[in-house]
Length: 210
Ligand code: PRP
Ligand code: MG
Image 1 (tube, rainbow, N blue to C red):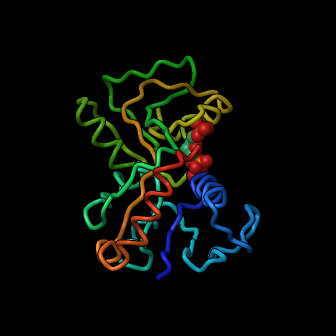
Image 2: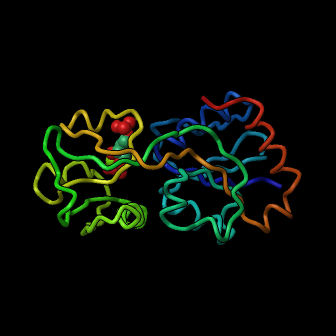
């Protein structure tokens, strides 16, 4: 039985596809530039689909994919872990969640501040735990813009290399969580395709993904 893997589209899918190729899985129609969203390997054992990261757990929960690979940040923000098994820390996509603001500009945290973020639940929890009063503005991307154009005082976002912050004249005020990419599995698939899924997990475990 073929395993269907939903990969978070973007950095994660590029690294995982490269890795699968190096591990002997050949996807004849796949290229990084392709606009196709579904690929099958030549041996017929894997089907890969490219999915927006917040949707990966939705596909897996509903059994439309057996396995998903997605950032832990997204799983935590969407509380997606409840209905799927988290089977492996893939070790790639390591990043930190941070509060960041305009470089050199002091933010008075004793006052109510506005926060632009793609992660409203993670941000709210963090500020509540630290007893800061905040207005959270949910954004869908390019959040670094928000403090530059006066939409928010700070942002809460993931930092991987720090290049995006630097390129936009922002700096980290505080790191408060770290994440990596996780493999999740549909509980029914885990039983029905136990052998195939265990083999795939072993392949990924054996050769550390870089
Ligand atoms: C993510 C994240 C940061 C950036 C961090 O954005 O939201 O902006 O990557 O990576 P870096 O520290 O290596 O620069 P993404 O590229 O996913 O775009 P989006 O925020 O517009 O969705
Ligand atoms: Mg971004």
